[in-house]
Image (tube, rainbow, N blue to C red; front, side, top):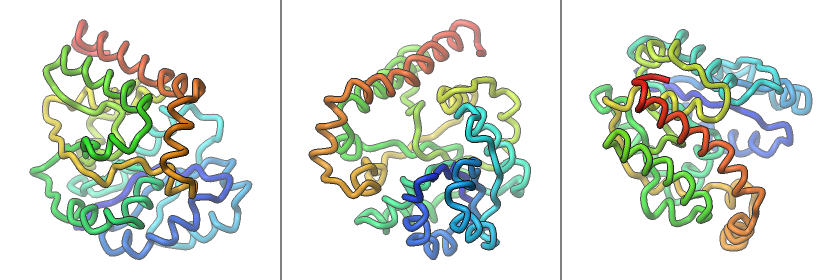
Length: 257
């Protein structure tokens, strides 16, 4: 049984639709199907592109309110995928921009090898950003997300990326864990890891290098410097890393959130 993809697809401006089409043949060759949420704003502004996805049996789409908090958005998607997939099916919880970057760049062969080589014995698994991958990201991204990892090391003696980009788990295990999820914001993705961290394995990969320059068609050095000097970007990272740190601390004290 081939694995399935699980990702949110929020693209009201239509940036991601052509990139998704460019990698669709690879996705269909290596994955069974894709479970994806489509916010109403994307449906309203990209009706033609959404219809193309709806007509493709590879996609199982779910409509969600554009105003839904991101944690609720993701939790709804993960519950749907965990319920509809075969219990033993491997699910790749990921993001379409990261998939496009990995498959349209020099990382394509390594990404496909890593995907195809997985079996249930390797799971649950977080694909970690390698040192090389992190070096491509703006420093404020790295410093703030690494801080969460360091807090986790101190509290749990585990080195985990709680703000993960690509997490792989069997459907049955995801189904078991979703009733425990309570967070409504971005810290929901860390909460998912907290409940599973005793069993989680990790693997460092270069194909999780920073995808934004590729997606936006901008010079990587210039965009990186711009983001590093942006107070708005730093505040954005703080808005989800600080709640994650608070949640980790409470979990360590109470044994649960």
